[in-house]
Image (cartoon, rainbow, N blue to C red):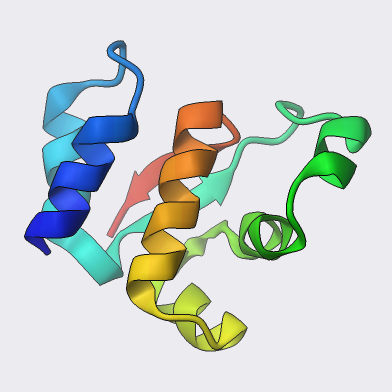
Length: 97
């Protein structure tokens, strides 16, 4: 979980609240995220890697990182790296646990 904490803090924009970053890291695989509707165009979506698109489409605010990992048959660290990219791009938001 320490790796996830460092990764989240290393890749999030400086404007992202530190307390929220800490909360995400502590929740780890139980953290929930949702896609921000209207923040990504069809062109941007089509240029995104398929693996990232699948994760983005599964982020509904109810599924945990663990659930997305199981649905995609990918490991939690791999999903966490994808989430970091999506968070840094502003396509998803942290919901909580």
